[in-house]
Length: 137
Image (cartoon, rainbow, N blue to C red; front, side):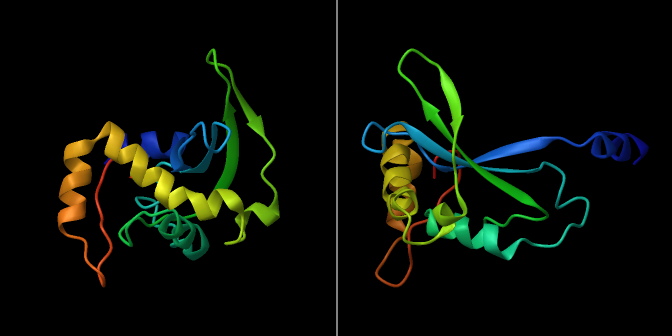
């Protein structure tokens, strides 16, 4: 128990990709940055961040706790990555990246994790969206 407390007290940020960079979206990715031990610390559920993840195609079981920072990165050909502006308006449901994220995430999962993607699609139906696990879902 003391070892776990020592690790948690140091803290650390975890990244969670909300939108995958693609050629179609200008190779821009959107990430949520969170406290990696937020649930273990008993931090309250972050309703807005959890809803944002659902809008990006992640299942309802994907819940964030505590404070969340959302940012965007541009992936340049050749490997350079830079942080770029992400404004308050970018959190609106009408933002282009948000409208594209669910489809682009599913396409990425289909390309990089075809078996997981197929299993997720088997359980999907008109009243039940597909779900799955893993990075890029």
